[in-house]
Image (cartoon, rainbow, N blue to C red; front, side, top):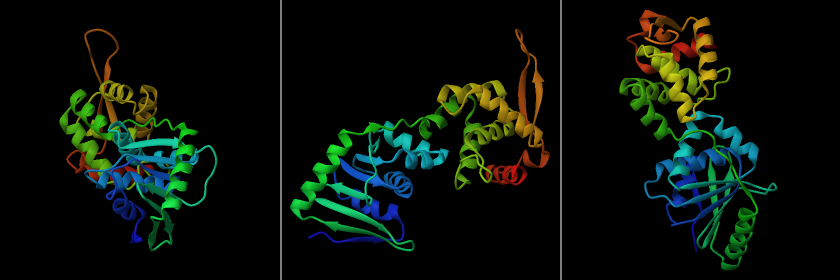
Length: 271
């Protein structure tokens, strides 16, 4: 008989459950919290199984609005570790169905339980049900690019120092949703480019090529950062065509600052 699993966090329970199976493992009726926990758990396991995640469309959209989580999930999808499908209809409690085991996730706030059973009839019925629902569901289109691709292309298209500052700023953030309290990936990349005095043309082309955002979005965000007094631009003549704009940090005190300090200053100004 399998033992129940307990932890302070959902991803802690999932790490232990995933680590016992070769896959594919189904996670059905995932809430937004469970979707995020699945991504975190896969990132923490070196030899992880293929996880098939079934959730409502709103749960996926809520979680993946955060660039940090969305880009991490995209890495797992690209590597074949994660598949995402939208449930055709709402289910009940979040459940993990693996080989020979069913685990029901119970989030009690300060404590999370994985209540488990290996009773053959229950496991077979649960697996049949989840496979039928999976086959009847449509794929969720994750538009966020993989973080590994974003970083690699940033280092190649601009410079390793821009990539390092971009990564440092993102690592200092809890979330990157671009709402009233958070910076987003476009703002962070422009600040990293400005710290290294890169061209707006180069960073916006990188953003469009990788799928981070359109050139128009980069242009609008650049204007907002200028209006806020965070960055400045200077014209750089070229042989043919209109001059291009070089980005710089407006506050000289930030030009030698660490990435986390720049991100914190930007959050303070923008909020």
